Length: 597
Figure 1 (cartoon, rainbow, N blue to C red):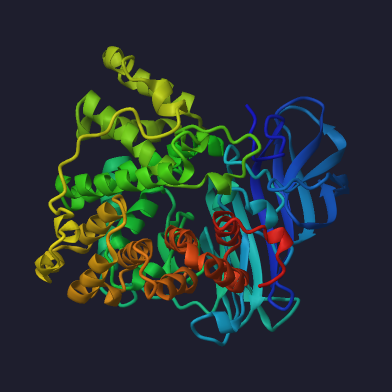
Figure 2 (cartoon, one colour):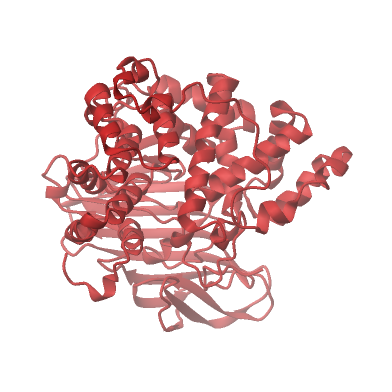
């Protein structure tokens, strides 16, 4: 099979190992690199291969120490530029060759965000972080940038001596750079084979702390993280990645978390006293099995990563909290799915569980669909096949069967039928085409308990009925769901949201999940005073879960449509590449024709 998001020739050869030498240059915002790829031929008379690149300056290529001819083909809009390499000799099937590429990244490399000292909390040192998922590693390293290829890696990273480098790997020592004593070389090794999108690097004035509790305002401590890891191991099998560290990234980081092996990235929006942190960390921990150990073969099968991870995350919550807690989180996920389907359009093929990504940028396809539609399918199968314990047994067996490999939906489905061979009659009644290849909401809604709160107070026409106790007794999770329910209804009268603010004082809430929903609700009700607050939140952090909906709400407020565009253009340069690109599409801004920043 082919990968529609990659040019690399992975049916003819596979990368087994990468050896990286990286020199981080903050003066020019580039990485000067050399990568040695250990490549195995999958056919006889093998003499040419193609690697993925994007905006890389290729300086030289060699094979087993001999100069190799190379050519860069025309650039594709989102797949980048194929690097076509001709070896100076032929290989037989099964033979290995070490292909060495010397190169330099672009200051605008899509995988890298460079922050000036002024953009950091300390204001003294610059900062660099990477985000390679889904198809951006090729802008940092020439490689077979497809999740179907898994390899180990070793890296040496030269950085200014005042800074620290960390990677998605186990630390392997450090030394003064022999070429420049004002720099330090940090070494890393990743002995577990993994796809290129999980290569990650951060360089900055980092501090290492054993306990994160003071950072996370007591939301999560090391003990809780260890309990989550232990619970996940009990559910899914041994943790194979060695260390588990959490790194809080700058506000422009576009996601809630990123499951880089050995080094989970977390958004700082989780530090404002909300308890969503434990959900995010549980999710990223779960990825250590579903995603990192067993990986989708192409991004069309992304639900295999995310649907199983949400399922495992909620099973961790079930073990550590209760079944009611799992049901409550599932209800919230269903609302997120409804919103994604509404945003895309119910007939949009990107709402398929298994979409076609032929000529589709994977970034454009990103939404809660693979997460929550995937979870809904697994939950539906759980109900059909015997309950949580029975179905978790399948998930654990699936992980063990396909560990260290990449799989397709067909592989998963075939194993499902094999594992439940005595229940094939039940499985045959599932409408697989409707679940997998039909846009919109799933054909079956899972049966979860009703939410304990109602929208009554906010909809009630008698404003005197609004009481502080309406929300005082709600947990943060319940308040989030309460606001989510309101966002699914017709906009509230302006008098009502003003009364809600007067009584509940939601403007003072710094929990990002609550604040973003509340501000969206206010803007939707055309409360003009909320517009600057919404735009401030949309730009002071860059988590797409919050930034995109906030910009969309202001953009849909006709009076402030131009203001939404103006604020976006004024802040675009400080945004992450993926965030800026998707917000531009949301606001119908053609950035190729816009020079104002």
